[in-house]
Image (cartoon, rainbow, N blue to C red; front, side, top):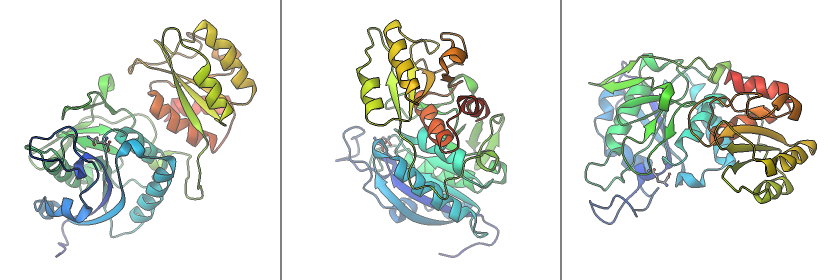
Length: 335
Ligand SMILES: NC(=O)CC[C@H](N)C(=O)O
């Protein structure tokens, strides 16, 4: 493939998902198989990519993203950092299943050590479907990763012509193509007419401005999530603590409230050294420190506006640096 001096060099790292999925026929939009099409075929399906970047592909994994693990994240972050350190790489696109795209994006947002654009992209319809969204999403992602305007914006998630920040974006619908939203905090911009338009930026630190470094890590601390509901029991919490959890995220009801019967088990877990973070199952809003629980007295941490799955990521990385709850709370107000 010729490389054009004026075009940016964008590396596509493929990990699987629906964007690389195939179905029985063109009307199969559920019940297809994820992660079957290789990166070279994904690139070949969108010849328009050549107009906006010199693209190269690398197949890093070939999985459905519900099977993403800490191990995959460490490998991916190290590969992204190695590539972005090269002067001949201007930006990276990661093709990914949509189920955990927000988690991988936030993990990279906290661990990539470069201001060069990193765009995580997926699709809701498999590559074989009528009006598959993969090709346009991939085209937009490559355009974005090669765009000067995307430099220093942190890790981005782009589908459906919209640009979202890794920290805020979440999957809001099981199956529609407009599923990714930053809810109340708002998207960063759009991609339209072969151009990325940015309107806002997160005030939270990311990439080169974080204190996290995974370059020498092979494993992350075990952090698990318990879900709040009426008539909640301590069974899941106790099992997680017994299995070695160093941190627990409570995706509590409302403002991260703690059910009466859960206070003693959580206090017992904390006394064993487990870090307790109060998040919310609601999906929007701040979990107020010393609001629904006396966090100062209980020595708990609040997740601020992070959803439980992202709070889990920040707590894992925080625990690689400290187990001091004041420090961990500072991190939840910083990232
Ligand atoms: N739309 C999708 O990408 C979902 C497919 C699959 N469950 C995954 O996340 O990889």
